Amino acid sequence: MTKLVRTLVGNVISDARNQTVTVLVERMVKHPLLGKVVKKFKKYHAHDVKNQYKVGDMVIITESKPISKTKAWVVEGLAKKD
View 1: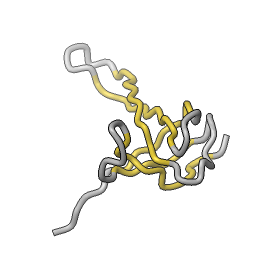
View 2: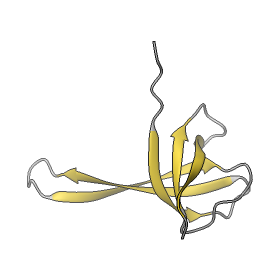
View 3: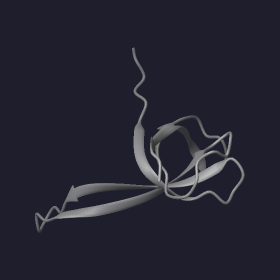
């Protein structure tokens, strides 16, 4: 049985903490009653071992085992440099 690993793409909005970046992920969802497409946002704390990603970079993050109380995602790579 293969294990599915969730991956998301988002923008780094904070790199103030050591080995941690905050990534804002945006998704488009259809409103159940109105039918209008709306944007939804969610922030994830991701592990960045080398402190190489800066604010504005678009990164790919994958789900992992919990690293700390709020971190359960790891930065896999850079999708687009700002």
